[in-house]
Length: 191
Length: 191
DNA sequence: CTCCTTAACGAACGATCGTTAGGGTCTAAT
DNA sequence: ATTAGACCCTAACGATCGTTCGTTAAGGAG
Image 1: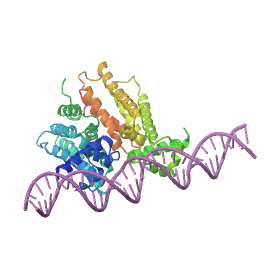
Image 2 (image 1 turned 180 degrees about the horizontal axis):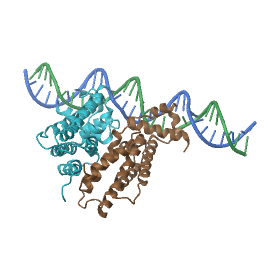
Image 3 (image 1 turned 30 degrees about the vertical axis):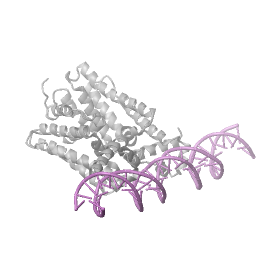
Image 4 (image 1 turned 90 degrees about the vertical axis):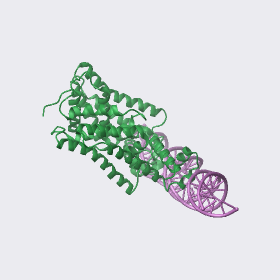
């Protein structure tokens, strides 16, 4: 992957995030690189390629961030670290995160199906944190797992709409989780 | 507003939700109504009109639903009813809700600015529920209001992506809020 | 019988879309 | 000095875009 190609992918992620996939023309992308639009086809086969690549980068970033969460900590702690990881990716790579969350649906053909599987896999990793936490007894046994996961994933997936690029997200994630965990664990931290 | 015009708006909301604003052509809309595309301009001035109208319908539905929440109940109860109201609109009018939440950003000119104000106003109504609840002492005084509102609004705004049309949302909203409130109020419902 | 409304037709507009083709100009290695 | 490859150009393609236009058909009101 040459330098120029990476530049193109980055520009594509930025414009797709800003104006949407269908709202961004090949001409727009070319202008962003200071180049004639026909020239882009020395680097890509189609516009779809750029969408696929941007969203793949997003997927990779999210999974890698989640990989760094150690699996020998208490459940609540791991959930906290997982949300930290997710929000950090959103803040540090807002463009690809936005493409991953919002623009993926313009993928066509088998790439679209591949993405849905990819996405399900990512969400399943979050779900597993809650499930394991409950099975081990670290979370209360009557936990409404479905609702809890949905709540965390909603916060995670909606974040791209309001998180400013480069924001400090660790503290924010902690505040989300402390709100949630006090409910999840069935008692509160005394005020 | 004649019947035909309303049909057109409804079809637009459906297609905009399904394929996105820029992913939906006037030709697509015409085909959905079984009509030549030029014929649509007897009803509208521009494609933007349809987007504006669909999103306005969404705004109206959400506000009206919130209006029905009585203001003489405890804070946690009002939050519960507000989320119920929101999710009900999403499930019952999935298309306009989707346009309201996701496609509004393709509005152009002053309509875009008007929408942002409209949206802020809606979110402020949710924020007020938490603020008043805290000031009155119904919610704990050290409540992380910002995070709590963000969490509820995230769940609300993300719902269009996974809520099936016509789902029973009251119970779901209750489960969300019971998770949240146990944290918010600083004690748990005994298991 | 006429007038007006409502709705749609079909053809065309200029602009822009994504994409292709062929040729040109640098740089760095041989 | 020659070659290879990366990079870009100009020009054009067929298709589709949103929009405009003049016309037509049906039906109720006077």
